[in-house]
Image (tube, rainbow, N blue to C red; front, top):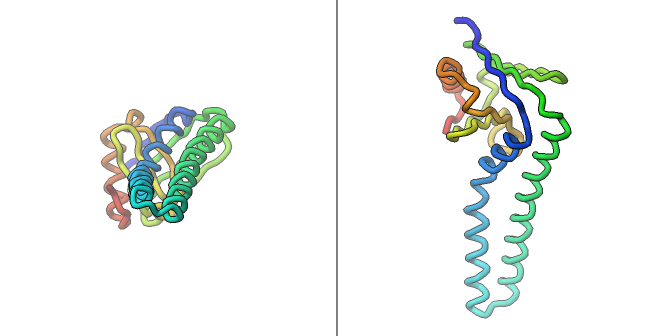
Length: 156
């Protein structure tokens, strides 16, 4: 089978959207931690409430900082055009300053959202590659999903 290629711009809007999606799992944790803080406060347990509140605030601030840093990185890169090429053996990402090719068996996870897909090459960590769904063709997305599933990646 021949390779399929797509192109898109990696800009601040894409970086912001991708980090919002990536950190969405943390929002539930922050809300639960906030509720625990409130419950401790209602039980008149000031030290646990203070500790839980500080933990909640720190985690929320780290999430905000992560998103801000992702936008700064996109701005520093200068909105490069990214080319993604896929075939039955691998996926390749290239931009003017860098190129990376990975066999399907090396990509550990893919998170699919309506507007963006997040590729996690080392498992679900803070390191991911964002790809807008609007840039994808049906043939491209089918080839990506088939390759990832054949390589044993987690697709959600």
